[in-house]
Length: 208
Image 1: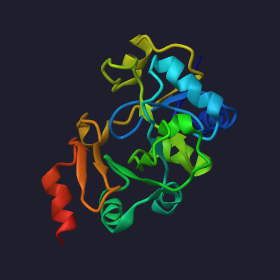
Image 2: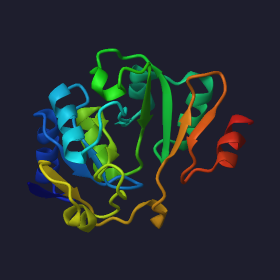
Image 3: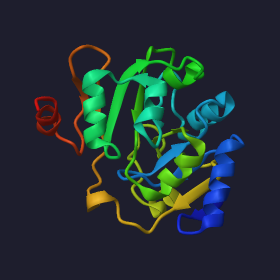
């Protein structure tokens, strides 16, 4: 297992190569530390489930770096697009109707929807600008607390990942609440999880 530094260009290059070669990377975001891989590499995705001891049947979210790429994965619709333009990059995860059926079914658990987010973290955005898409689930053993620092990752029971990408930057607003998850697959908006972005902020944008 490698420890890589966000501030070192050669370490970012190494992190990108790990993703592209089917490896597992743990990385900082603007909320919590994430663990991910190339979502189109089925074996790599299976390894995510193994590392997290996560039961299959639970879909995984995907991170990307711009709205146009997100639209290649899901149908944002009018409301989702409005929210994306207002809150991305940031702590909002949008679940939309799946468009890209080239994704392995293990990512979506065979569902016709997918959760997508653009994180507001310079380090992971640099990786995403080269990789386009990364599985971005929380860095923890399933049903345990998510890690909010590199130190917590190292002290956790997470094993068999390829590299930990560390950052000394403070988490955005120093607020460690997880992202808000909004479902836009139907005509109405449904809040799956209210996190850092509150429902009142969501509806304030939608009612403009």
